[in-house]
Image (cartoon, rainbow, N blue to C red):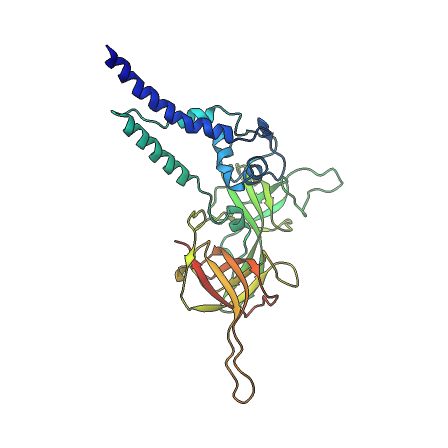
Length: 359
């Protein structure tokens, strides 16, 4: 008669063991975290994770609790009320339902661990944030992006004696837009407003993004599309050209590994509106996607060793100037954002080498 009781005790003990880590994780949540957060202008999941969880890389934890209202984790909007960890029992239920029924306790445990590892891998943040990719300048053909659309004017009626607003557009402004060639501009589709920079012989034309736009009213009956400014990267006025959103090559979650190729090139252009380039400024050079360049690769800017001059001076050693992370790659060249700087001489013509490559 004791056998049935023993048979029931083994699964019960196993369930208690599986539930223990869940309870332990719940106890790790800080007691001072509120139940929810109302999104304000400028908030991101990255910022909320840093503020409430102490680590920006834990943003997927907040995202998982709010998938009913967050369509894209890159965009959260003012007024949304987001649940925070420690006050959402749905999180515990989700972890418990990972366990699948099986013929033995040991098989159940293995399945739970496998699913957990797969879920963790799927939630790894991209090595280069999507925002860094979208705002990065890049080089394209000399004529610029093909078939661009354009901003017409502000769609909201101004309170002053002026027919339409035509300049200094800000985030959350709504604008009338002619879509680029071939685009239907469906609702929630995103576009990039930009300006053209310098054109460089044997290289191309520099394109400088100025804003991220999202369609809030698709064009119909021959009317213009209405878009909202989601993010502003620079000054944007009426007649600004518009192109389709391009995120090709972004989203990789791996980490670059050391690369020993001796091939070098030169800086062809620098973008940032200041006299002296420094951290977060962008350098453009002519290693391209056909050369195997990828978003997330790492580069070094340096001045090469100068050979000795007989009877005048010895050789001058190589000088490290700065390092950077590749944030945009096209068929014409690559863009790297400066991440560290040892010397102030970041100039067009300085040498560039690839030091680490993404998988």
